[in-house]
Length: 341
Image (tube, rainbow, N blue to C red; front, top):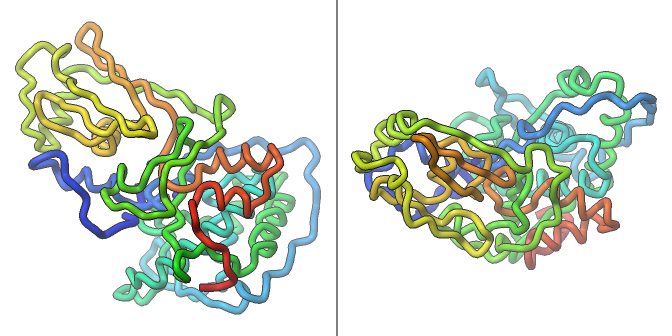
C-alpha cells in the first residue's frame, strides 16, 4: 500500500511550522500510503496469450456488497469479489507469481474490512473509495484489459483465481482486521510503523525482505540545485537558515534500525525521513544526500513507505517456494488468518 493516511492518530512532528502539505506522507499505500499500482511498469504482452476460464467468486466474497465511491463523486454498489479484483489488478502486476497475487488479495480484503470498520466514508454514503491516497487503487476490467492488451484474458483469470482461492481470508489481530498496509519494494528490511507514522502496531515491525536488483528503478537519484532546495524549504515553511555554503546545509543525518532516514537537519531545521521524502519527491526514505558544485544528489533505494508487505519481496518469496500464507505470516508479525472478521 505508494503515502495513503492509515492512521488518523498523532505522530511526533520533527519540524516546527512544517507545511500541511507534508502531511501527505501519512496517507495510505494504499495500503495505503503509496499507490503501489501506480508504481508498477506496464508490462509487455506475452508472445502467446493463453485463454483461461474465469473462476467463479467465492461464497464469502461473492455474498457481500460494498458501496464504492467513484472518482466522479458518485457511489455504486459492488460485490466485494469484484472490488477486490479491481484492487489487485491495480495494485500488483498481474505477471507476478500466483502466490504473491493471493497474498495481495488477502491484504486488499483485510484493508477493505478495516476501512469499513473505520467508517471514513460514511458522509459520502459509501464504504470505501477508489483513490489510492485514501483507500486502495482500483481499475475497472475494461481499463485493465486495455492495459494488458493480448494478455487480458489470461491476466484477468489469474487475478480472479487469486481472489477466489483466498475467499474470505482476513488477517486479524485480537479478532479484528489489521491495517494490512503494503508497498512496492524495500531496501533489505521493512520499517516499523512507528518510524513512519509515529504509532506502534505489534504486527507492523521490521522484517527482512528479499527483493533486489530485479526491481525496476530499485536504485534511483534525484538531483536538485541549491536554489531549488531553497525554494522547496521556503514553500514548506521550514524556517531553515540557508545563508551559508550549500555544502553545510544538510547535517546530522540519522537512520532507523531498518536503514531509513530517521531525521536530517536542513539549515538547522529538523526533518523526518518521511518529510524529506515528500519534500524532495524521493521514491523512499532510504536515501543518502551529497553536494557538489552547488547541487544536491539524493541516492535512493526502494520505493514506498516501507511498512507491511513488500510486493516485490512477496513475489521473490513466492518464486522461492513460499505460499501466500507463509508470505503474510512473514510480513505481518503475529497476525492471524481467519475467515471473515
